[in-house]
Length: 328
Image (tube, rainbow, N blue to C red; front, side, top):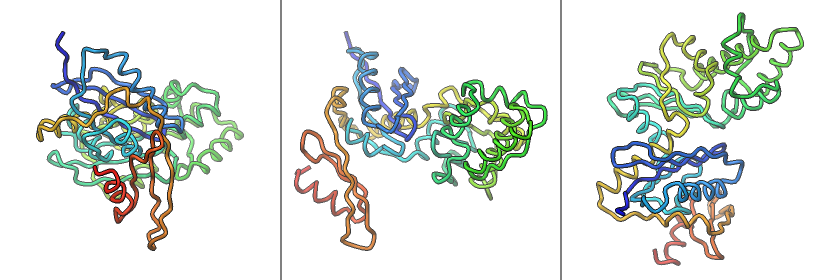
């Protein structure tokens, strides 16, 4: 039986670890959404095991791309051919599924982004990684506090008749305001409706401030599944919001396409270690370099007692030292 060559994209984030396998036509063959739960190595290991089982011997990996906050870690563990930031990966995926897209709204588990594209090129972007208000983890917390399944959260917002005004600039203030509104007798529907509007208002007043939001507008990331937030965006902007088919794994999808482009343009053989590589034991260690005023935090990864990667140093001294010692 002839084996088929595919490409793997990995997006390691603080809340989820996503893996996508695509074919030569950029069609998704397999996709996984795994909760990171503070242990990205374990999440990646579980994802690789699942893919190996699902794909079997009929598929081999021709190229690998990693993205997300844990992209360097994922690259070291699996052997990536290309490592790209989230902005580039999300933009590539959005343009594939929604040709001509001009605005990307991305809200994940712990952060949010806005990406402005013009003529197929990233023209401007902004990220919020400081405040959790409006992110997936914040919405999960509020749904749990109200004893409402997160899948039904958006439905409550749509049933709101008179959304209340919620302070959405800060996660702490927003929760306090919600509790106050409950105590004054407002319905759960109106409180959730008000919360969705507040979070969208906060997003537009901060990340999107000074930016021209033009259609087509794509909404991706896990929070795109919340119809209450989608409705609030459409209401605030007066424009249609498009939810792509693979909204929850767009970063990994983009990384897979970037890996395909890299391998095809260079003709190089993939650096992928194989699905069994994730079975190895890995340890992460932080080193604070005090050799200059930058005080860089250097991340060191070791496996089986051997240091295999370092990053985080601005001058490259620690990473270069490892390269010299290993001869790679």
